[in-house]
Length: 93
Image (cartoon, rainbow, N blue to C red; front, side, top):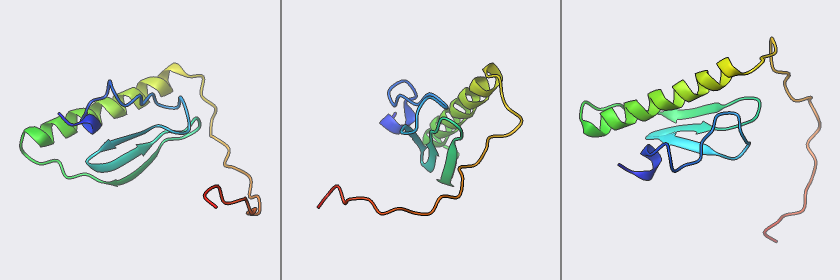
């Protein structure tokens, strides 16, 4: 099983930080403290690899649901205010 298919090694805990990402095939779950963004696509093939990806997808969504069920949830998460973009120093310059 590839690293992106091992839920115990990637440190992905739903809503725990703003940095962790879990990939299932070309599907990415980008963690956040207020929301989890899901991007990409996933082809679940009818083979062992497809089964492993389907299981990881299920475990990931189950973890998200469990985290939501355990929290005292507001009616809705407020979106970030519309702040004008600002210029920052290039960290690579």
